[in-house]
Image (cartoon, rainbow, N blue to C red; front, side, top):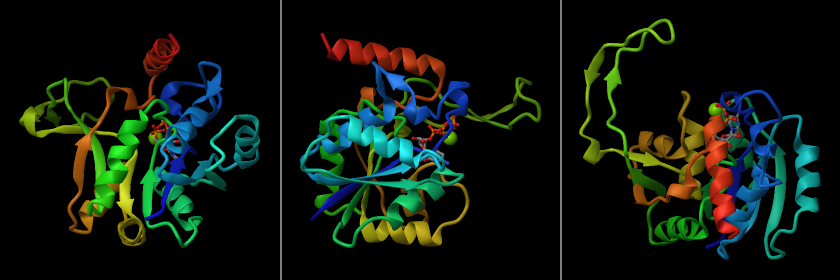
Length: 235
Ligand code: CTP
Ligand code: MG
């Protein structure tokens, strides 16, 4: 089975603050997107990486791919993204050649995921799961609240789900290609991950162990952590 990775990288990165689109911001001197592409291409199973670029940034992303050394055995495609993550992933899926039957979807904003995590996801799909997510137990207790109208106002707590049954999920998420395409064709509403769309088809999604270093760069403090992880790797 041939495996491709789709990397949604079309977001602005509003929560990170003003600046270039998040995927193009530098981490250890190299754009976050290049780290994410390498993280996928480093897996020997991945033979194609489809980058979903900011709508006005496809040319810039192509230039980046030429400027950075990437594994020779991997092919690359660049397509423009959409207004939501879901639309961006769909654009990537539409660009996928026929002969790939396993698809990974990986956030450009998770530049430091280790290759062992990528391989574990692929292996679980090869073993027959239609959808696989890397997952970690939560450190914090989680509350369900009645959301306040104004930000910062006190919010009544409605419930405390049993933390031992909760998981924080990461990417890459791995899929049987036909299943993911069907999910994107039929599920509407704004899903924040692809696996939840497969759940909505009534199919079973399974987890594999995630990794701390697969955290998502979302807020400024995450950049501090990412730089520290990179510096530790370079020791
Ligand atoms: N993404 C995308 N297209 C969009 C929105 C998001 O391809 N229209 C991608 C982002 O580039 C990122 C991933 O989806 O790699 C996860 O999204 P998130 O962390 O929310 O990134 P942003 O949407 O860029 O950040 P923010 O929500 O803070 O603006
Ligand atoms: Mg977002």
